[in-house]
Length: 130
Image (tube, one colour):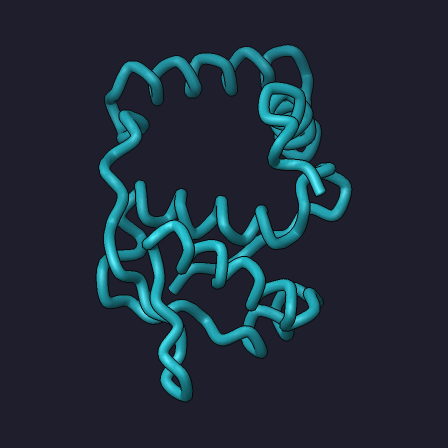
């Protein structure tokens, strides 16, 4: 089961954070076709996010063809995402690992690294805001 982490200071809309985390779980194989996503109530309980926000994220996933909302049964993954080239040992992952090591060597903490990445991502993808 996917566990959502919401960063309220990231500048990325909460529902998009949920969408992105589901997409990442699909890329990494943590979620597969047929898996059930947590209910809106479960996400609300664990993240203190309004259930309607989770439902908005799930509708976006459904529109993208990644999930199906089954009335009374829940929300289920309908397809996997092709590997994004970020698996262990891939050039993309090696570059990311090197960047993380460099950030740590520069004295950045985990939250500072995450904030730096999310700022860079938000600047490169302004459509992901709000």
